[in-house]
Length: 169
Picture 1 (cartoon, rainbow, N blue to C red):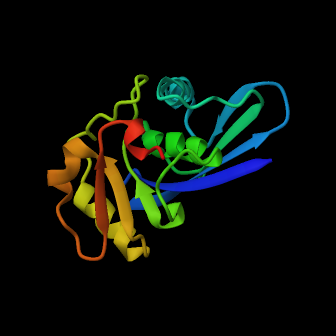
Picture 2: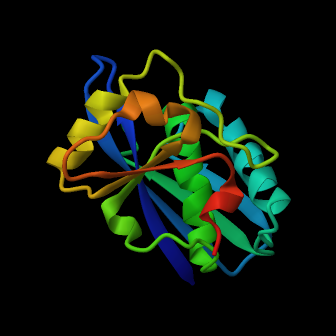
């Protein structure tokens, strides 16, 4: 079995930020991609993430791939955590060139072609980054288009990316 984890963030119904852990497991079995911890209407994230990973040259495992988004009882916004799921899956194969993923929050969505669109204007990036810093996070990866909105918080390295290829080794 192969395994990796990444971090992202979500917001509660009241708008309070919280950390999301994406855990990915590759195990023997028939090819299937299961995503646990996201609402049924957000299940399309599976196809988009798989297509994006394959588009940038990642060879999708020909076995069972299980993605777990924790905590399972909190709402997830694909626009905030889809990029973290793609990075988590690619990290299992060692194709991600980001060290120390356990101290990195990854925010954003991913398009089927591997591009990373801006996060919606209704998201308070400053609050998310401040919460990550309070949790001991040292690095935040987010869409390059949102770098200006993110500012320059003390103690947190901010990295902007435009495409999944920007994260590959």
